[in-house]
Image 1 (cartoon, helix red, strand yellow):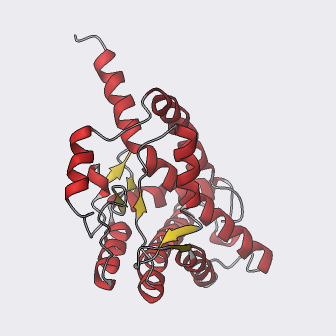
Image 2 (image 1 turned 45 degrees about the vertical axis):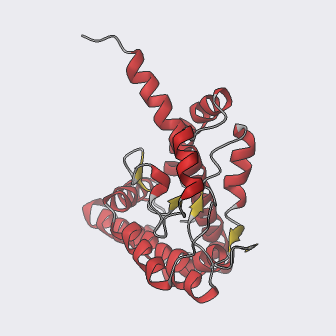
Image 3 (image 1 turned 135 degrees about the vertical axis):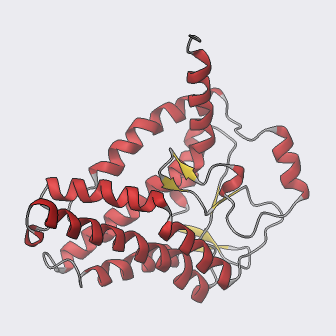
Length: 249
C-alpha cells in the first residue's frame, strides 16, 4: 500500500467521465415519484443503497448509500455494526481484494511476501484484511463511539461538478447522529487505526512516512467510492441507454 492504487484509479477513470457527461445532460437523477416518496417517508435506517443496487458496477459494495437527507433517522450502534458486516463479507469486497492483490503482486509492493501462488495468497489475505478492518473501523467502531453517521447521503440533483464536490467533501465533513454536520473523525481516525493494525501483517515499510502514505491512499480510495456512489444512478442510465441503442438481432 505504499504507492497509488492503479486498480481503483483506472476504474474511476473508466466510469467517472461518462457519468459526469450524463449528469450534465440530466442534472436531476431522482425520478419525481422517488422524490415524492422520500418527502413522505423517513430515510431507511440501514443504508438501503438509496433505492439503487447493492453493488456498483457489480463489484463495489453499496450498502451504506442513502437517499438525500429527508426526515433524517439516525442509526443505532447495532445497525452500524450490521452495515459494516454487510460491507465486509460482501462478495464484491473479496473481488476488490483480489484486484488489489494482483496489482500489489505485479508491482512487488511487499517483497517479503515472495513470488508465485504463495505470495498471491499473502497479498490477497492482506488486502482482504485491509478492507474488513477499514469497514469496521470507519462504519461501526468509531461511528458508534463518536455518534457519527457512516452512510453516504447522495445529493442526486444539481450540476455534475457540484455533485462531485459534494461527494468529495463527505470524506472530511459528515453527519452526526444529532443531524448536525461535523468533521469526519470516523473516516480519518478509522482509516488511521486500520493502517496501524496493518503494520502487524505488512512486514515491509513500517515507517511513519509509509503509514502516512497508506492513510492518504485509503482516504483517496474512499473518496473515489463516494464519487461512484453519487453517480451510480447516472451510470445506470448511461448503460441502459447504451443497451437500448444496440440493434436487436
